[in-house]
Image (cartoon, rainbow over all chains, first blue to last red; front, side):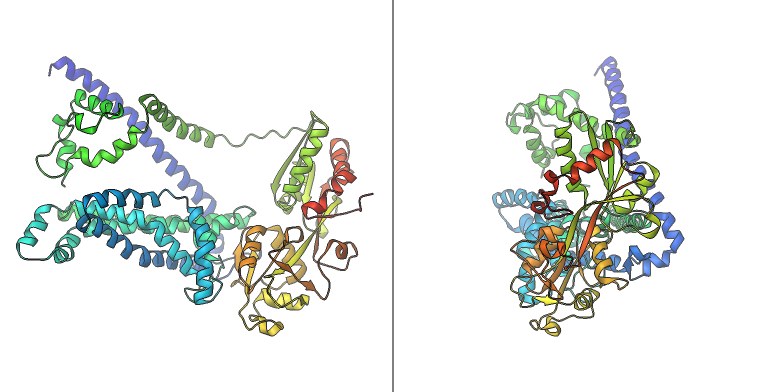
Length: 295
Length: 337
């Protein structure tokens, strides 16, 4: 290639680099603005009442200046954990089937269908939950039906596409030579999957699970509709529960003054929890890269 | 790092290749005719992995794609710009516009009244805003609004405002239609919502646990219920919380063991409103002052209403509007003539 052409290319490259940088920075600045805004609105009240009041208080009565968020923190964790219990085994099984056992044609049909799940608006999930799942739980297991269980099942289904597609990617990234080696040693297909493929893809799978977890903990609309939203630490999986996100969304409309600030404080706590999750996810994928196994 | 080597391999990114690859994809030719952008000797190739993305791209003609790209840059930019501009609502105090602000319970009705008013008097503007009763009261006091809306009685220190009752809203305690319980005392209702009474058996119902459904903290309906029924007693935190009258009704209509409270006007055949101390909740009983779970919808002004504010208030109190109220679930302050 002539030096003239290279020059031209370099110039346009620089231009593209610059414009991409601008776009990337604007995305980052939105994050910064959101962070600053949430913390600016939420931190003052947390310091006024003390962190302990928020993190360990069990009574949420904003009109009486009681801002205990412990029921919501526990609620969020319970619902998210429940979603993982339901979503992860299903997701892993589907991903293993689609990559290792199904025919190419079947996988080519099923994978887009599963990805369609991600495109269904959460309010639709919530509505279906309210119409079918909640009455089912009420009649079969008792309680009000609006419960930890209902929220977990709905969220478990909602995280499926995330878990499945990331697991598929990381399983596909395991080199075929691993499988061939395992087969050559006389292992069956299932033994190969269980003892070679899954361990090699482990960190990618974990990252997928953590992303699904992030989706579950952040989901609001569907949870509001099926969880019952009682601001109390649930005594069983059949008791109603309120998550941090639903706490904000439920009460934002009418909140003013300290009540509003307390909702921002809820946002701060949620923000920190999600940051921790993201950091863990990043660390686990970094660890994997260092190890050099998998992809 | 299975694919990584190829992503960074410069030689693969020949401009011509990249261009024709993309255009051929966009021109709806099959992928096979596109020149290989990245090729691996063995196993999966990059284009194969990118196929679904390209299929997605094919949905757009090149022109549409350009528009899509432009909008994807412009839109976030626009939003960013918007974020930096605080809402610049003008607080005009001229005589052709009045601001009505306050209770979100009154707001939907006031919106309608304002619409009808503006239809009759073109050129005049009635600007209805929410914010809640307390915010409305503050807004009138400070002069930020001409008329404040409140769905609760004024407190002692707020009594210096002019208050005009424009309507009443009843509060109904509702249960599932199949529930045998027809009548409760106020104390029983209080016991149920505070969590002291947990089984319908205690109040002559079925042997089932009670599911209590309430509104969220801060809502006017919950505030009115707290004030009129609960007094200083807390509503149980085990109660299920919903964020609208409609969803409370929906849940009560589906759960045979539930109880909740909603605006009287929103009671329909799917739920049963129960009597309190033997008095049925009805417009008649409210006008006779026998049913006590009633809250006023108040319009507030700083001084004796005048000008446009006066006209609007008079319009709301006119037969035309007052006779419309029952249809919307409210109780008129005066019988239409």
